[in-house]
Image (cartoon, rainbow, N blue to C red; front, side):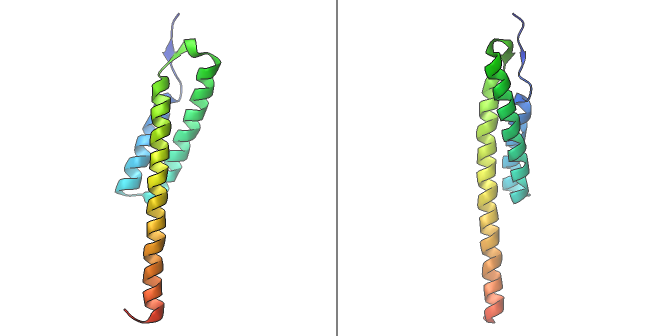
Length: 99
C-alpha cells in the first residue's frame, strides 16, 4: 500500500516551533496565535489519521507539534503575566509618587 505524508502534521510542528521561538525572543503574547494554529492543525491531522491510519505516515510530527504548541502557549502566557505585573508595579510607583 502506498502511504503518503499526513497533511497538516508538518504545519503543526512548524507552528509549535515558531510559537516557542516567538515567545522567547520577541513577540511574547503574540506567540499564542501560532500556538492555536498549531493545535488546530494537530487536531485536524489526528482526526484524519484516526480515520485511515494505514494510509498516512508522520503521526509523530503531530504529537511533537502539539507538545511544542502547548509549551509555546505556556511561555507566552507566562510572559504576558510578567508584563502585566511589570507595568502594574510601574503604575503603582508612579501613582504613589515614590519614584
